[in-house]
Image (cartoon, rainbow, N blue to C red; front, side, top):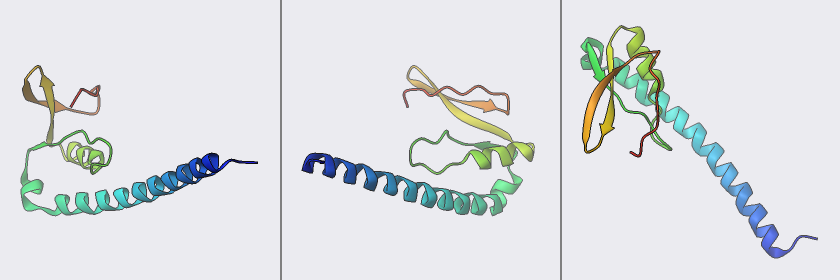
Length: 102
């Protein structure tokens, strides 16, 4: 027989899992919509260089936009922090990514 503590933990774990699945679906839908709109912007269409970021946790997944920009032969820059300075570094399909402390 399960104790109340185990029942509560099981219920909590189940609810967290459901919330994460729902959030993942909503995030994907929102990301798709945002990226579609960005692709339609005249300034994006005419840009030869675009600055992006590496999304973490619940941020909009912009990797499809990065790949789209690269496919369109745009230079894509990502921020790289070295010490107390941030630099914009060009990236392509062969770039190795490493998560930093930011």
